[in-house]
Image (cartoon, rainbow, N blue to C red):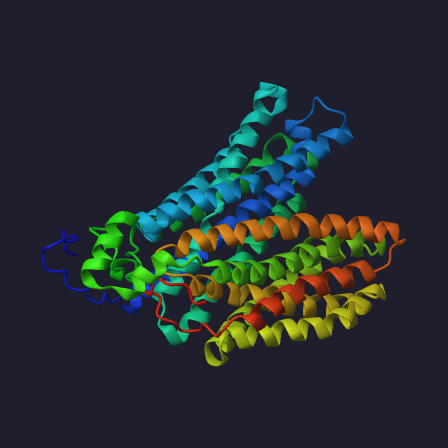
Length: 466
């Protein structure tokens, strides 16, 4: 691409249209799917390990109850690093390109997870062991903060306008793959090994084995071409975005009205709409995928094996739900489908929760699968394309990542804790869960109602969609 001109010199020609082959699109889709799968596998591997063995391995010097608390706290530490990673890598991705940053994030996440499998335990290294565990957990979260957002941005900018929804939904499919794969590894491990061997060395296997997916994902991303939208941006010169001052000069010379307008206009409405779309989905996810399993097992006193089985069945059904909803978003528009899906979820919350509250295993399965696929997986399918489409090309990665991570931390941080306290105060009533699910879903519905339709817009436009 030509360099920016100085005042008094003829303006540069507009950047040429960049084309990508079907093979390039396939590689981008596989890259996004693998990265998201690895992210969710990493976190699921760790959450299961924290619940099962880490209290004994890394906090053996503490009282048993405190050891469990500390083990779960190290799980939470990773989420603290995610917004920082979203900001740092998001800005980098908008400046030097999506491809390079997605290579860095997958490598950082994968290495941190693999290295956990080589850590010394408290018995052999003392306090150094949990410190190293926390540092690796922070690194894992730092990389993950921009991974799923970057994958969504990359696929949105690669896919044909009329197929963005179904192609970007592959990112959401990665969440199912990662969660199922991690759960399967631990299930097999616990089934074939005695507890002593698991504690002695078996716990290392899932973390070290994750390196296989990391290596494959890194290889795919090494062969991935840059997003065509990034290369077509008028402010990108020799693979790097111009500074704001340079952009003002260039846009003034070329009379680039879109860019000048984007530099003057704050994306306040776009940010708020995106935030509440994400807030609603993340809040429902925290309540349904985290708290509701605890409610079924502890409050309803249903046998422990039912919870994991429900999650597996519902996630498998999600392999059909996610691309189907993505396709519907392409056909009827993201805004319209958000309104339909959130309205449907509002109607279904009461009957599905009452079905779960019967304590009958068959009805629990029906209730959970229906509300999980509509209020969580269906919204996640659209979210991966909806939010990148809303923002302008110049700061798409940064704003997408920051909005997603901050909304998720607030929603998932408040929901399960508030639900647990409220249910306890009402002696096991399911009404608090119904009310919270309705509030989260309503927030996403209102955001969609107040937004203009944005489906299929020109992603090279530096202005936000609203």
